[in-house]
Length: 96
Image (cartoon, rainbow, N blue to C red; front, top):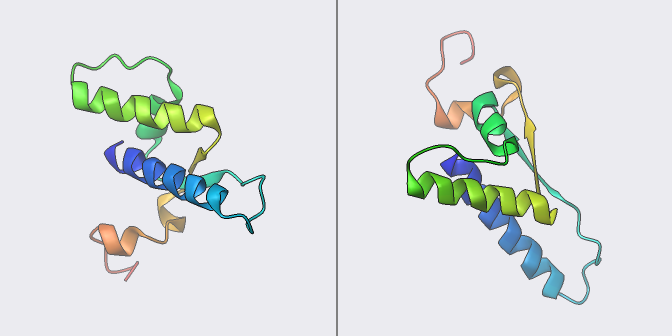
């Protein structure tokens, strides 16, 4: 959830930067963020955060705001198709 919040903030900032460039096409496309955590995607799609931690609630509202603005779309990617897994997780011998 925290990584999704950071990525959505960066994507929103990049979209606003591209919008200020006069040579760039004006209907900016939605930034697609791939996530392999179904739990994080389910929490993001839920409009109400029912947790007790304030900093996580703030991250949840940040992601929800970026999604509602149309700046970001979060999509599920299966772990076997995730290209970043070798950089972030320990892999077994078959995947190496």
